[in-house]
Length: 200
Image (tube, rainbow, N blue to C red; front, side, top):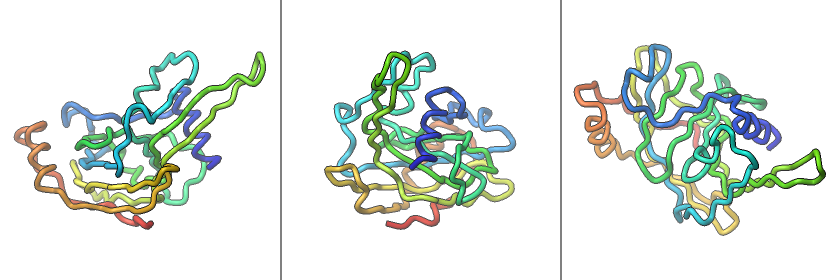
């Protein structure tokens, strides 16, 4: 939990490279792959459920939390300290995000339900956090020569306390491939490489 808190603070400070949806394959680059997939929460997270108030938001970090997941990536499955790469896919829709090829382990992942800065003195404030935490680590099967990977639909069931009660991995490759070709016409289709190491 401490590692996640440090990573969240680094994200707020702008110290983490955040990958949102890309607009073209040219944005991916030679040392990265394009991940195609989907994250669903059951029941879906409603906008009014997420509370975000982090003071002066110089880096517009709010956009990374509302309606999105944050997936911290590492080169080792047991990485417990700060990571400098985070994926920021939208919820409930197919995403297309850039992943550095050497960061193939999701070591921490969450949907932020509450992130509120609270002053405790004239010079000090603390962050109140509530998160829906993903099972971790999760491995992504990146191979030499990969340009785009389809990793599946990760469906997380939750209870009223935002605890994950069940995890499903769905193969919806055909529908994702249609969206991929619509977004990147003329490109080779993504290789199917469903997520590995999911337990719940």
